[in-house]
Each structure stands twice: as structure tokens, then as C-alpha cells.
Length: 72
Image (tube, rainbow, N blue to C red; front, side, top):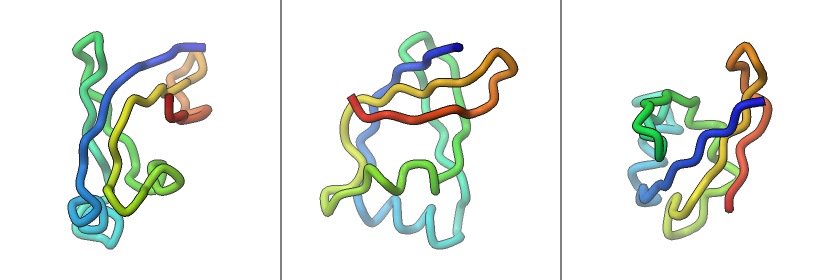
């Protein structure tokens, strides 16, 4: 398994724009400098009235297939 760590600070309104169809993915930059494109729907469980704020860990398998996304 591989782990990728990153921080997000996206307002609620910015996220809603992504989730409602204007854009379907969110581009994040990991602590290691990698750019990862993830479906906006993966972040929905972490959405609050303030938006998406905080540290996250993405876990993938050996083939870089999504396993889980966690808020830290």
C-alpha cells in the first residue's frame, strides 16, 4: 500500500461547484510534491459548512487504485 499526505483548504462554495458538475475532480499536491487528481465525490464525507479544511491521507494499492481517504 502507498500513502499520500496533503492539506486542503477549499470553501464550501468552491466544493459545491465541483460536486454539482462544473468540474468532477479536485487536484491536490501531496507533501512530496506529487499532483493527484481525485474525484470530488471522494471528499463528500469530509465536507462541512466551512468546506474542506485539514490534513488528509490517501491510501492506494500497489497499482495506484484508490483504497481509502482519511481525514487526519
